[in-house]
Image 1 (spheres, rainbow, N blue to C red):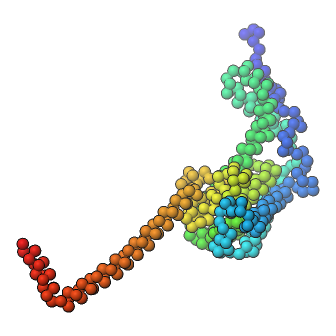
Image 2 (image 1 turned 45 degrees about the vertical axis):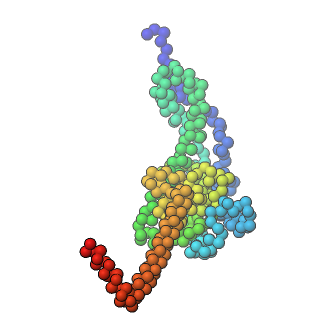
Image 3 (image 1 turned 180 degrees about the vertical axis):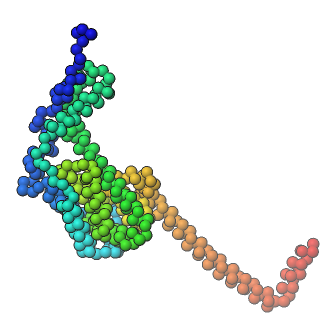
Length: 375
């Protein structure tokens, strides 16, 4: 048709017009070859989790040591301090050595499997590969090419920027959380249901009946390698994280697992606010009543919820009350049986003794009984 002009959105060059200018970066991005001068990002991904683990642990250890007399802290302590010594089956020095062994294995695994990333990444080129996808998606969604074109001219650059710098990296991290949660849930549950694996490997971790912060990674070395170290590497690779995202995943995982074993239910702890899989939730799993429940670690509880292995603190309290009530009833039942047996035995013995000793009385009783039967 004469005078008809095809919308510019159909032109291959249109996608280039919505690419953000090079040098437009979010606050978290650094163009430096490494986040810390003199330390490669790969080295940082191996060192940061260790520092995070011990610094976070020492904060809670300080509360354990110096906070025993602080009245304000008492309501938030899940177990009394005395329980740690009375119920745990392993010394703190043994725990420290086992954790150091696991962290050495973790570091070696990271050296082998965590890839270094080229520092000179052309982010504009990467966004250029995404822009045609955004154009086609907008056309399909809106249906009207003129409306799609005007929308992209106005918002396309911002949408592409948000998708590249925020939406996709966040989705990758959340997916890594999901992969790690899935890996640990099913392995953890299997190590509880398989008697051999529990007895020889996972029972190590449950020697800490009352968990504390720096005991978070107290495991058999094989389990520590399989659950935590290998699980983190699998999550990092499947999610296709950059080296700096890997630093975040490994460090945050370390902070989270320490917090989950800290022994305090703190309403002002951001990790315990953000995640329902927290210290109180995981503590239930360490108790006899919940040892076959709450397998989820370290982030979310969806697998426990979906597969029926979730136990709340309210359920624990209700079951404990019921158990005590049943135990009391059982004790009372045994006591009544003992009293009744003793009383009946004494009464019968006395009555028989009296009857045997008094022939007339016995004759009257038997005679009257016979008379009743005849009548």
